[in-house]
Each structure stands twice: as structure tokens, then as C-alpha cells.
Length: 287
Image (cartoon, rainbow, N blue to C red; front, side, top):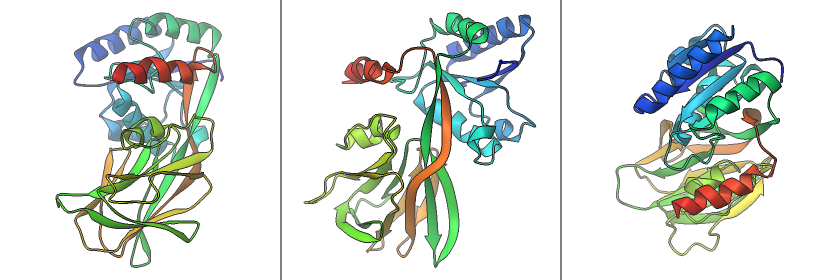
């Protein structure tokens, strides 16, 4: 990572402590002659519309805030990972599994980062989702965590069909299906009974939501695989991409999901074993 000459601070707007700390850190950085600015993490259009992004984005919020900023940065870089800055993440959330530092650690951590650089940069690969209707692509997007096809306002279970690499795997009667990256395997997919994947595994996990008598309860496939979801009965259905973007899904549509070459980069200040420490400390805390 090159020397840091500019920093952007993005905070959860409904957490006053996050805004206060972001403002305080920005002042300290500016005093050292580094170009800096502060913005609400929810101002995604303004973030994506900036003429250029800084060398580093410091995100103060929970996992949802981090997902929001990552998506905005990717939009700015037009999906090109080399055009998006790394994220230094600060935990102001309930779980904070994606966060690198606590609020108490961030000032010292940022000073160390500016003086010495990161210990390492972790690249988390994304999923790519494509929605087709009548043979035409009507939407596509990237997901850091997961792509979920689920029932909308209807209380009825869905009848969903899962293909992997063109082969029929299962017909589900369920409330939905989650396709998660290794990053997302510790989120909704885990709550639905899926396995946890370490971040360095190039794979996806497919987990049905509340399935009725399913033979395949969860499935791990290589990230290069093409997963296709469709519905065999008309129901009110919705696609959720990282819980941030929602798309209507109707009978006859197909949703294709595969691994992407795009990545989100995270600044790491500790060792490569941090994931297992987070697994024990943060997921243990949540249980």
C-alpha cells in the first residue's frame, strides 16, 4: 500500500458517538497535513459521485454500514477493484464481525497506520448476481455478503428450483434461498444453518431458508460455479443484495450468481489469525 496522503471518514448517521469520533479523527489527520473529509455513510450517492476517492476510507459503524460503504466505493470505481480504496473499519455495531478496531483502539491504530502502513491488506472477493427476465438482463450487481431470494409479503412458502452448473440440484419448498460468499457465511447464512467458511476459501455456500423436507440442507460449491435460482409457482418474491438493494422477482425470472473477480480490500493491523479470534470472541458474544 502506498503512502497515505488522503483519508475519508464515514460514520453511521444515527450513532452520535460515531459522528463525534469521525470528526475528532479528521481534525487530527488534517493537523498532520493529510487531506481529509467527513461524510455520512448513508450518503452513498455523494460518495459514489466524488471526483476521486481518498487513499483510505475509515468506516465507523456496524457491519451494515461497512457493506453500504463498500458498495458505494465499488460504484465509484465502476466495479474495478484497483480503483477502490481499502477500508479501515471501526466497530459501532451490535456484532461488528467485519470491524478491525474498537472505538477505543482507532486513534492509536490510525496513527500507526499513517506512520508505518498496514500489517497487511486483505482482499475479500465478491459475488456477482444477474437477474434475467424474458431472456433479457434487467439488473446485475455485486454482493460482499450474500444474495437472498425470499418471499415478499405473501405468507406462503416458495417453490424454488436450484441448478448448479446447469445441473438440477434440488426443488425446494421454502421461505427462500441464501447464496453467500465466505464473508457472508458468518451472517444470515449461518443463522439459517449454513456452515462458516474462512475468508481465503474460494467458494459459495447455498442455504435454504426454513425448507420443508429438503434432502440438501446446505451446499458449498466452488466460487467459479454458476448458481441459478428460479421459481416454479407464482408468489410475491424479492431479491435482497447485501440487504441493501431489493429487486422484484417473478415466475419465469432466473437469478444467476457466481464468484466475481471484484474485491473489497480491508486494512489489517494484526496477524493473519484474526478471523479465528473474531470467530471465538464476537460470535461467542452473540450466542
